[in-house]
Every structure is written in C-alpha cells, then in structure tokens.
Length: 66
Image (cartoon, rainbow, N blue to C red; front, top):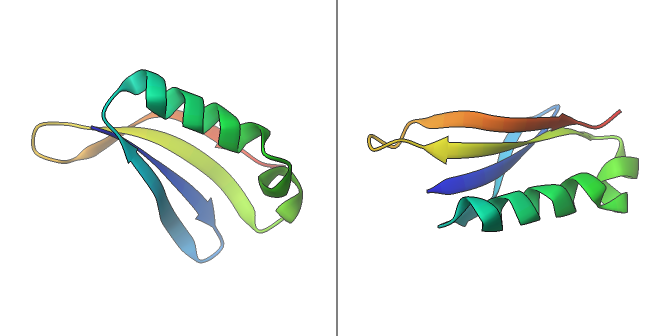
C-alpha cells in the first residue's frame, strides 16, 4: 500500500492511499506541480510513503515547497 501526506506547521495530513506505486507517483507529481500547493505558503512539503507488512510507513520520495 502506498500513501501520500502533506506537511505544514501543524503536522501532517493524509492525502490519499493507493494500491499501485504508479498511481501514487502520478498523484505525488500532480501535488508537487499544483499551483495552490506551490503558492499557499503554509504547506511545507509532500511525501510518498510505502507501508510494509506491519503497516509501518517508509518514505520513498519527498518534495519541499519553497
């Protein structure tokens, strides 16, 4: 299982869960390119995670908004 979270000054927010890595990567790229996220100023970053068999997430990719 793959998931995406955004991060801001208050913590992290789950954005979505995906069955395939390709679906998750498409959504991740879309968020990274989204003008609202790029210009908002409160969203600090977005991460793509893969959960292992025990449900523990491991970061696969990170994008920081500047």
